[in-house]
Image (tube, rainbow, N blue to C red; front, top):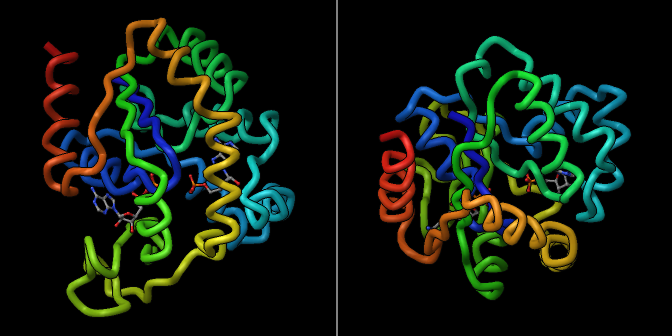
Length: 216
Ligand code: ADP
Ligand code: AMP
């Protein structure tokens, strides 16, 4: 089953994708995490993506599509995957459909996690991330030990692009380039809106309920 988690930056896509992928044994594909991993390892892709990420802009479609296509070709993605942060443009959505079609598969469901803009800024300014991509929040999801990941105890860090100025640009970019996907998936009958203002636990329950409905 291929699920696309849609929503603005800070909606809770990564948080929910970690929980659901564990619960359902699905591979979690986060395009942002893959870019950050490439950046850390100073690969040509990471170095190319850096400027766009620092400015809160989207990395060009050709690079992003090739990267996700490669990830989807791996053995652990043959039975399904949870996509978080991809697609973000109509061209990426079309490329995803074409890639899955080549594999004889298709997108089964697109939960759209909606959260108002003011809340996104508070969430992103309080976000702390682990090297493995787990996310915490100083107020809404604090780690058990301050500054340390609950799972492996590694130090948490604040993302450079979570600074208020960059966050504002990321939200602007989302509104301009990604919101057309809401109608795109609505027209395909795949979109289900989820109220992302509820607690992390409640959003998780709502998401699992819509996924189970599609599985039946
Ligand atoms: P995204 O992947 O959509 O950018 P994240 O999952 O990283 O969003 O969440 C952004 C921040 O908001 C994190 O600090 C996370 O702990 C927090 N968060 C996620 N979901 C909720 C929620 N339902 N209520 C309050 N805070 C949340
Ligand atoms: P995220 O971790 O999803 O918040 O993404 C962090 C940054 O990585 C974004 O601001 C973009 O610069 C880049 N990025 C992640 N996913 C994509 C995508 N699908 N298309 C283009 N750029 C992306």
